[in-house]
Amino acid sequence: MKKKVSILIFFICANIAFTQIKLTETEKLATTAKIWGFLKYYHPEVAEGKYDWDDQLFKILPKVFNVTHKEEMSQVFINWIESLGEIKPLNITFY
Image 1 (cartoon, rainbow, N blue to C red):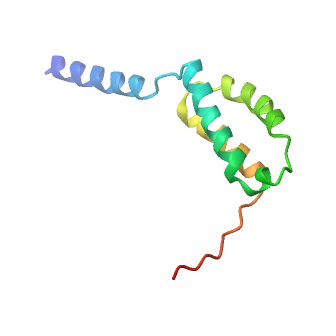
Image 2: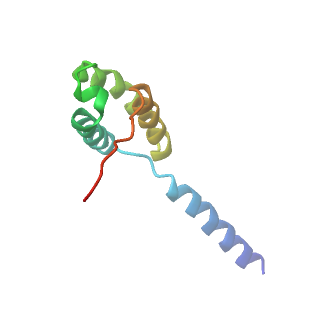
C-alpha cells in the first residue's frame, strides 16, 4: 500500500514540475516578435504612429527575458497591450 501511495505522490509531483517547464530564450524572442509585429499593424494607436514602435520593442525585451514561465510572460504582454490604450469597437454592417 505504501508503495502505491509513493508512486502516486511521485507522479503528482512530476506532473506539477513538468507543467511549468521554463521557457527558452528562443521561445521568448519568437513570441515577442509575433506579438510586436501583430500590434505594429493592427493596434489602432500604434498604426497611427503614436508610439516609437522600435523603442517599445527595446523596452519590453528586458521584461520578457526576466520571466521564466508562460504565465508570467502572458502577464507581461497583457500589461504592455493595455498600456497602449483602449481599442474601440468597430461598427461594421454586413449586407
